[in-house]
Image 1 (cartoon, rainbow, N blue to C red):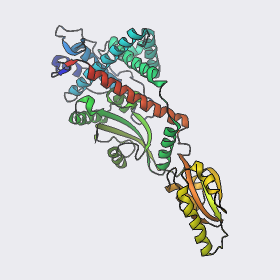
Image 2 (image 1 turned 180 degrees about the horizontal axis):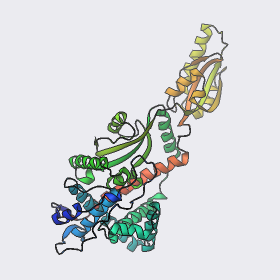
Image 3 (image 1 turned 135 degrees about the horizontal axis):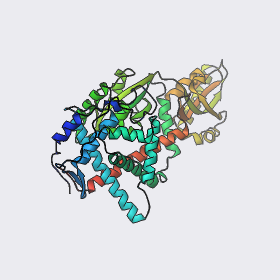
Image 4 (image 1 turned 90 degrees about the vertical axis):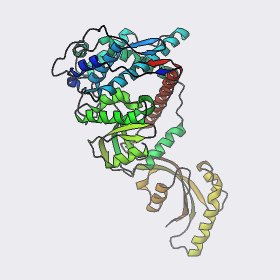
Length: 450
């Protein structure tokens, strides 16, 4: 059973947060494509963390596990320090809500991991040395030592235990999801070919290199809350908060872990509302909040390029040889034979055997070729047909032809490899599994906010 009451405003604590100078933790500029570091050295030292006050109280209870107002204040400081957001009276409620949500989710995750460890007698939760190693990696990415990085956080009033707890929960949960489900997932060749086919079919369309923040309406408390939150985040990013850092802390998408980086997309890969917004953006621009069925997107358009016709098709053909100067009656007779044959060809696998039953026809495998390298008459048919479809008779100087498209994929230097596609599909499925898993834990839990 779940109950909810209004979250405490923490007036005194909010005032202390407003006094912090968190802008010094800003990340690299939005236009950078490389994975940004977590924090940079601040321009000015900030007040040290205040000791826990006597007014500390319970902010939430998750299955009898208490989240204190001190925990929430610490997480708010951490969110701002690592996202580059400047605290204002307008955005503090959003930051507070995100702090509470993230703490509740981490409590649910850690409770589940401890249960699994007890029942299965295995170790899942990251150890102190493993957390230390991750901190060292983060510091190295910021061209700092671990001690320097810790000092920068503590100078902003952030207890190291708060940061370590976030790292421990995130890494442990990811390891558990990957370990439990990763080996069971099977990405079939049909899924990979379908993905390649979609890429090939959209190859001629404009392509966009984007980053995203997605606010899940179900997670944040409804569409209105998501839209208001997106507007607040956009305002912060326009004032300098780096997009990758904001995405890491606030996005509900699977891309949050890598700063919201989606990569290159074509029309049809994102929701229709996002496609429409992309058409209006120029590289370097942020979108307005984009409402979709289950939440709100913020899109940052990093780059744009014209589509190319570099699609590779795998073709088979049935040909009825005809001289270039054949009479119309001969052409019509050959066309009738091919039109009669066409519905009998049920797949590329049966094409040659089916055509072999008709005298005078030649069937064969043309192999893979770029559409632009095909004869003009074949280009049009190969470009329009979907995989598994067969053309109407096509006239060339050599005769009449039926063309069957047996495969289609994107070509060129920008085309993802087979392994890259497989890894992307696997990552998407694991992210969906993790989301459902956490949703089930939340639904089964007793959660009270005060």
